[in-house]
Length: 629
Image (cartoon, rainbow, N blue to C red; front, top):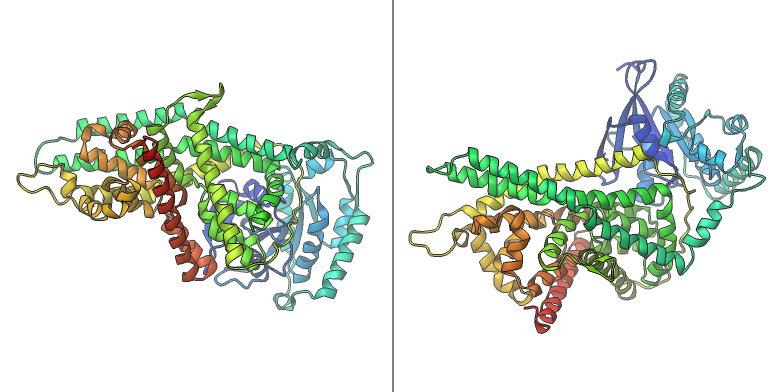
């Protein structure tokens, strides 16, 4: 296609926490898609923006990096994308270097490295409104002349400077550049790095003047939030409030979703006849299999949205980097690198991005340790399981005059995941390899007011992913669970429930002796099998199994059914199992790809199943001894 009419290829490059993704969202809005690069699991975000001239711009959001020397897998992808070395990827026509205007010192050296590549470039000076509020004085003309690139000031969260940036991109792409310059770039040696650092320092001195009366508000806030004791207390209090909110605030929305699915199920049951050789089977598939199964998972969407709302708000506010700083000493004592905090925090959403986020850790052993413990963090897929069992066995009551007891139990389950991750990492460092953990260095971003539109957009993205997962994974699995729980039909004269004679019943009863010591019945075993594809499917599977075994116990009565058919000891053992068990094949696949090793994937499977069985066994036996059996 002619270079004048084909979409313009633009790559966004910058340090982590520079506002690069916020700028990408401001430019592309909803016109973006997420995939992986060919051959690797590094996330690939591409979007489209239309210039005023009508030309289409394909925008690529590259992983954050501090240098093109690339010391981690994420940085390698960014380097290769900039240099046009990625398989199946077209080299960018223009590079947009994204810089945090409040902290130019680190990014200037990266900009000089990008300049050496020889491609047309534009510098987007993001968060410029915060720099102005702080009193920073940046000589934009001098900065542009020193770097030899156009400089555009932007505030991504308010979409300021976006039209000017798009125009500058078009203008930068107009001059022809030599394709041969791509092959001239070589990784800088120590002398070149020192020279670039010196030049960056000179540019910083010449172009940026600190405020005459610096704003000390950030310092005063950090004096409280980063206090070795008080800061940790505040962090724990925030987590406590978050888990209380997951239960207290989500209840009305959950009741509404449950009511909607109940109405839909009753409506379908009234329309589809229950007589004849085929229609009862069709009704059972739709009502007991699909509607009850998928509805049993989607009912937990409000809780997941509330959890993500807290995480996104704290991230936008600039608090997450402070939380990483606070946790560094604790994590270092457990043998984890300080940078492991971000991957482990990501694992609260899903272990897959948590495992992938470990690429930011340079040292191979530290990265491996982080990946091995990331699945122990309580991901959002566990929330449906935890909520169901807590609702069945933990009373809805207030303790200490202000705390929700169910929220306290949820907080305890999250804490158990965190403590177990720290304990396992400590054992790994002491048993498999010894040595000091590398020091943790992190730039603390400036505090900024979260942008409501950005928060809502990210929340919608998370909710959409969860609902797509329900449609793509849970729906087909529920059809399989329903079929396995329905066929074959019981023989003539059978006295037990029909599910006892089905494939699911036979498989569950065959495996039940293995799980009997930890208090699991065969219905629980049946739920664990499809739960290997996705943890939350266990809830839908339990709903399907018990709905078929006792049709009156379907839908909203699942928790009541479990409370009637399980003992307290069994319910607690099920919770303990889910704290540790690697019930997610997709996570195991990503671990294998990230580490390029079957060995470490199987090590993870074995140690997590062993921990799950041991924790469930101890929990069940202790609960029985205390009268909970």
